[in-house]
Length: 85
Image 1: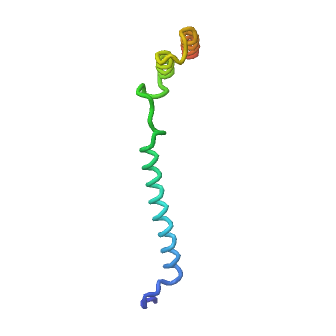
Image 2: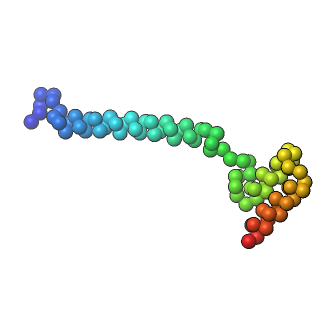
Image 3: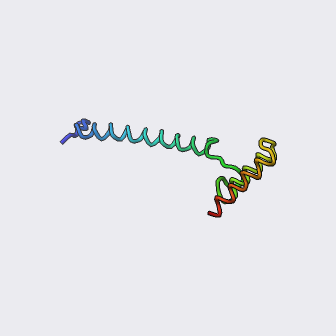
């Protein structure tokens, strides 16, 4: 028996494994928290690429003047044609 304060080989092995697992859990929690707070997780107000999401994005681009009316109507017809198929 090891009653003199010596943990033995298995005690040191378990202590080392526990140390690594503890710090892995801490680092994982920090990374997950940072990802949830980051800008990469945000979506458009329309709910992202759901039904009508592409049309809303196209309408926003037209409203900002990035595309003209002919390009807007052409792309809108392609979107609506693709949704019907």
